[in-house]
Image (tube, rainbow over all chains, first blue to last red; front, side):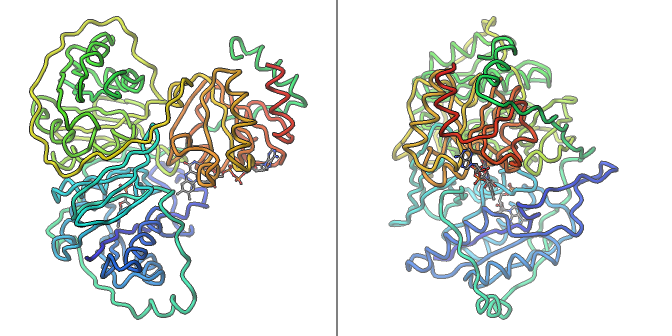
Length: 249
Length: 309
Ligand SMILES: Cc1cc2nc3c(=O)[nH]c(=O)nc-3n(C[C@H](O)[C@H](O)[C@H](O)COP(=O)(O)OP(=O)(O)OC[C@H]3O[C@@H](n4cnc5c(N)ncnc54)[C@H](O)[C@@H]3O)c2cc1C
Ligand SMILES: Nc1ncnc2c1ncn2[C@@H]1O[C@H](COP(=O)(O)O)[C@@H](O)[C@H]1O
C-alpha cells in the first residue's frame, strides 16, 4: 500500500509574523519557513507504517512555488521515498489544493492519504476533508492514534468532549493531530541522501485544476493589542482586584 | 435569503455553541432554519425551536447520524443545500469535520472560523494564530461558513419555531463508530464557562494538576483548561487544550497558572475579559497580556488562593 502525504511550506511556528503596513497581507519575505508542524507528524506516521511493513512506499507532495522543494527535501530526508512538486505561483485555497491532490491520488492510487489537520498559516482546517469528499473516500480527522487492519483504519480522534474511535474502510483520508506521534529529525547523512531522491515536477494544469481564488481578500490587519495590566504583590491583592471588578468572584 | 444552521448537540442537549453560531447567522440576515440531525433528537429539536430568531427547525433522525460521522452528515446537508444560500456551522470538532466536505461537494470555498460579519458576503477571520485578521469576500452562489463561537453572544430563548421532521437519506456507509471515551463531568464546559482556571507544563504531573488546579476551579465553579505542553505530557486530557489548535475561549475570567504564554496558547484565550497570570518568571510573555500578574510559585499561590476565595 502506498501512502501519500501532502506537506505545506509555512512560516515557521516560532516566527512572530508582521502584517504589511498597506494591509495587503502578511510579510513573509526573509522569514524562516518550515514544514507545517502537522505535516511533520503525518510524514512520521507514514514512515512508521512503512517500518511496520504496512506501507510499501511513502510519497510526499507539495503545492506552491519552486521553493516548496525545501520541505519536500526535508520529508525525503526524514525517510519518504519520493516527492511530487506541483508548481504554482498562485495563492492556492484549500479547495484548489484538494482538487490537485485528488489528481495526484488518482494517478498514484495510494491506500491512505495522511494530511495535517490544519496549516498554521491560514488556519483553514479544510483540505483533508475536502479531498476526502472529492474522492468519495471516508475521512478520519484529528487522529491521535492510527491502526491499519484488514483493509480498514481504526482511528482514535481528538474531539470536543474527549476521544472518539472510528473505523474507516481504505482508501481513506486521515488528518493528524498533535498527539499522534513525535516526528523524527532528519540526520545529516540522510539530508545528503535526500538530495538524490526522485522529485517529479508538475503543474496544476497537469491535473486540469484552475487555481483562481474563490474568495477575495479585502484587507489584512493586525489584531488589536491587549494592554498589559498590572502586577499584584499578593494573593490578597489579587482577590481584592477581582472583587472590585463587580461579580467576577 | 435563507440560512441553514447545523445544530451542535449530543443527541440529548443542544449545546450553547448553536445559540452562538445563531447570532452570527442572524447578523448575516434572512430566515434561519436549524438542522437537528442525530438519533432520538426530539428534545434537541424542541430546544432549537425556542432559540430567538429561528424560523424553522428541521429534525432528521437516523441511526447513522447519532455519532455525527462526517460522511452521512455532510451528505444530508448537501441534499438540503439547494434550498439555502448560506450554510452556517459552529467551528466545533463536528463542524470542522463536516463543513469542508459540504463545501467541496458543492464546489465552493469554505470560510473558516469567522469572528465578525461585515456584510452578508464579507467576513473577518483570524490567520496565523490570530496574529493577523483577514477580511474576505465571497461572491459564490453558496457560502459555507464555520463560526468561532467565542466571538458571538448566545441567542436568547424567546422563540417558538415550527419543527418539521424530514426522512433520513441513506448514508454512504464509509465509516463506522466504534467507541467514545468522553469525559463526563458536572463542571461547566470550556467553551461556555464564565471562569476558566488553566494549567501548564509547570504542574509537572497529572496528580499535581488534580491537587492544585482542580480545587481552585471547584471553588470558582470554573472550567479547566490546559496548555498543549500539559496535554502532551499527559497532565490533562486533550479536550482541555486551549489555543490555536485547541479550543478558543473567551470567559469573563481566565487564570493561567504556570503557562508561559506562547502565541499558540494566547491565540485561544486572549479575548477573555480579565486575564490573571501566575508564573514564577517575571519575564514570561503571558504577563504582556495579563490584566493582573502575580509573580511566584504556583504550588504556594494556588493553595493560598483557594483559601482566600
Ligand atoms: C503546531 C503547533 C500548535 C500548537 N498549538 C497549541 C495550542 O493549541 N495550545 C497551546 O497551549 N500550545 C500550543 N502549542 C505549543 C506552544 O508553542 C507552547 O509550547 C506551549 O503553549 C507551552 O506550554 P506551557 O506554557 O505550559 O509550557 P512552557 O512554555 O514550558 O511554560 C511553563 C511556564 O511555567 C512557569 N513555571 C515553571 N514552574 C513554575 C512554578 N512552580 N510556579 C509558577 N510558574 C512556573 C515557567 O516560568 C514557564 O513560563 C502549539 C505548538 C505548535 C508547534
Ligand atoms: N499547498 C499545499 N501543499 C501540500 N499540502 C497542503 C497544502 N495546503 C494544505 N495542505 C495539506 O492540508 C493540510 C491542512 O491545510 P489547511 O486546510 O490549509 O489548514 C495541511 O496540513 C497539508 O497536509
